[in-house]
Image (tube, rainbow, N blue to C red; front, side):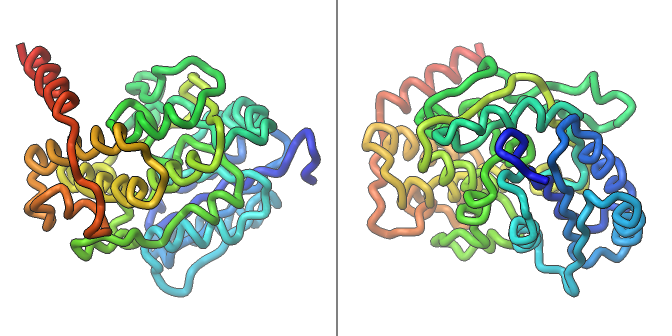
Length: 317
C-alpha cells in the first residue's frame, strides 16, 4: 500500500521476444530494497516463450502485474501501454534486457519528495556478460549525487554533454511519463519514430525537464545496461542514432522556449552532424531538414563552430 513516506513506484518492463533475458530483468526489479512497488510487464505479442516465463513469475508473486498485447504494437506504443497500466505515483522504465541494482528505488525515490524535481537518474554500468557486470564501463557519472537546475540538463543534452538519452536509468512521476512520452515525433523527412524508437526516449526527458526547476542525480551505477546485438542502440548503428536523436532534439527546440544563443549553438551541432554522420542518407540535406517547421530559425554560432573545430583538432593531435 502506498503512503506519503513510501509512495508506490511502478517498475515498467516492456518486452518482446526476450525469453533468454526477461527472467533476470524481472528478478532484479523484485529484489528492490524498497517496500512499496509493483512490476508491470507488457509483452508485445512475443513468439519465443517470453510470455510463458512472465506468467510463471506473475503466478507466484502478487507484486507482478502482467499484460499481453494481441498484436505487436511496435516498441513505443508498447512503452505507452506500460505507462497506461501503471498504478504508482512514480514510474521507472526497465528495459527487458537490462538490470536494476537492489538499491535503485531506495536511493532515488527520496529525491523526488521535492516537488520541484522532475526526475532522478543514476549512473549506469554497460555490460555484455552478467557474470562480469561489475567490470562494465560506467556512464553518466560526471555529476556528484544531488539536485541541479534543469537548464544544465537541457543545455547539456542539446550540446552532446554526458547526460542520459534513455529513461532506462531514470525515475519520474507517472503523470509526466504519460504526458511526455510521445508516440511519434513530427519531422520533415517522414521518419517513423514510433517504429524505430530512436529519440522518443530523450524527448521524454527534455519535455519533463522543461516543466521543472531541478533534476536529481545519484552517482552510483544502480542501472545496468546490457550491450548486445538485439538492443536498439547496437542494432541501429551510430549514424542513424545521431541523426534521429538530433531530429528529436530539434522538435524540442522548435516547440519550447530555448533562448537564441543556445539554439544557435545547437544549430551549429546539427550543421556538423549532417556532414559527419551522412545526414543526406536519411533525407537531411540542410540544417532546416532536422526541424519539423519550415519557419525554424536555423542560424548557427560561428564562435561555437570554431571552438568545436579547434577542440577536435587538438584531440586528434
